[in-house]
Length: 269
Ligand code: DGL
Image (cartoon, rainbow, N blue to C red):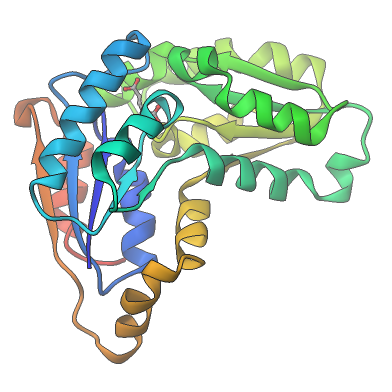
C-alpha cells in the first residue's frame, strides 16, 4: 500500500513519523509544499488551489490513500480533495484532532473542574474556519472552547527556530492570557507544525494538557477496513516500507527536518 502525505511544509512530517511507526510495512510518499508555505495566512480559495495541486502530484504517483497532514488544508479543502481523489480515501486532521481533545478532556480532574477550558492553537485560516471550534463547542458546551491563531509559529519552525529564545517568548505571548484565566485545560495543537515544539508549548502552559492529533490519525486509520492488508502484512514481514520525499522548494527545507529525513526518514522508528 502506498500512502501519500502532504503539508504546506515540514509540519506533516510529525504525522508521517507516527504513521511510519503504526504501519511499518506501508510505502509513503511525502510532499512538502515549501515553495508556498505558509498556507495559514492565505485565503480559502488559495488554500484550495494549492491543496489540489499537491493532491494532483500525489495522485499521479498512484497512491492508495491520501493523508492531508495539514490542518489548514483539512479545514478548507477536504471536500474538493475527496472529489478529486475519488475512489481513493482521503483522511484529514480535524476529526482525529477533535477525538484527541475529547479523550484528553475526559479525565475527571478536567471535565469536573469549573475552571478548565479547551484552547485550539492553530493557523489564522484554521481558526477562521471554526472547524475545531464548532464541533468541540457542540460536544462540550458549556465548557469554554477558545481559539488562538499563532501565525508566527509556522514561520519560526520553517526557519529552523525550534529551540530559540524568540520562539519561547512568542509562545508565551500567545498562550499567557489563557493560562492566567484558566488554571487547567486542554490545548489542542491544531497545526501539524506545532508538535515539533510540543515541549516548549507544554512548558509555557503549566497545569494544561497539550495534545497533538498525529497519534489519533494513526488510531483512526487503524480502524479503517482499507488498512487491514497493511496492518496484517506488518505482522508477517520485517521488511520496512519505503519513503519518497518531494519538496517544491528543496532549499527551503530547514536543517532540523533535513537531519531527520537523512537519518531516520526511511525507518519506522
Ligand atoms: N502545518 C499546517 C497546518 O497544520 C499549515 C501551516 C501553514 O502552512 O500555515 O495547519
